[in-house]
Amino acid sequence: MGITDLIAGFIQAELNEAGGELELQRSDLAQRFGCVPSQINYVMSTRFSPERGYIVESRRGGNGYIRITRVRVDRETLLMHVINSLGDELDLNSARAIVTNLVESEAVDPASGQALLSAISDNALRTVAREDRGALRADIAKQILIHLV
Image (cartoon, rainbow, N blue to C red):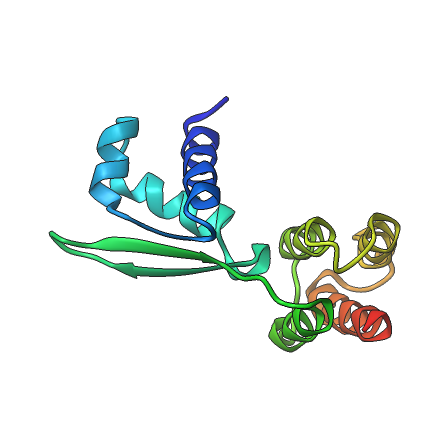
């Protein structure tokens, strides 16, 4: 298990214990895990992103903190939030993170999540020019999610 997994696991456990909202000192975390503060930033941006159902507020400096809030909303609200936040382009890694969050939060059943990922995969879009796949992927994802609302 890598340092990123250890940090993420620790934060997740603390977040669960705190009931879904947690405030941490970046420097304390870095010292606890023997890493640089930028490693903490990496964990925040990859494991606790809005696509994964979290709001992260950060203040840098001597007394800087990180506040993490787990977002819990009803299924329709979550789906509409995702649809509205997709933007004009969607890369496959972001799509996977979004679908994982939707499945874990039970807003989308696993079979529908897998079908969505299959429909927007590079293999499914192989006849489309690479530079156009992100836009098409976003459009397809939006339409499928709208159908699921």
